[in-house]
Image (cartoon, rainbow, N blue to C red; front, side, top):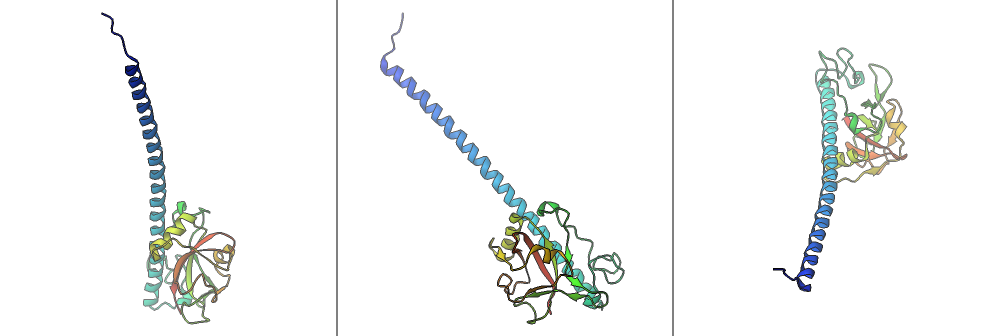
Length: 215
C-alpha cells in the first residue's frame, strides 16, 4: 500500500538536512581555529625553550668568568676562548665548556657569543657603558648574542622580567657585533639598570646582552 507523505514531513526532512550541514560547518570552523591556536601555542613554546637556552648559556659563561677570577686570573686577562689558563672555554682550567647558541633563535644563524673587550692580554678592557649599572662612567664587561629573533627576544624578557616588552636602544647592531667597538649607553633609558635583557637596536635588530662583571 502506497504511503503518501505530507508537506510537513518533507519540510521537516529539509530542515534536518540544513541543521546537519550547519553543524558540519561549525565543526569545520572550530577545527580550523583549534589548529591555528595549536600552531600559535607551539611556536610560542618553542620561543620559550630557545630563550631559556640562551639565558642559561649566558649564566654559564658568566659562571666561567667568575671561576677564573676566583682562581686568581685578572679580568683583563680573560678571553672567551680555549686559551690555556685564561680562556673561559679552556678545557683544563676554564670555567665552562664552549657554549653554542641555538641557530633557531637567530636571524643570522651563524652568529655566536661576542665578548665585548678590546686591547690585548693582560689588559683587555671592557667596551660598554650601561646606564645605572656599576659605577657611573665605568665600562662594564659583558657578553652579547646579536640578531636574535623577535619572538625569542620577547620570551627572554618575559622570563627575566615577567613581560614581553622590548626596549629600543640608541645604538645600532654593528656596535654590538664587534667586540672592540665602544658603546656609550650611560644615558640610554633602554638600559636603566638592567644587567641583562634583550633590546631592539636603533636599526631594528634584536640583541641580548648580559654582564660578566660590573665595575
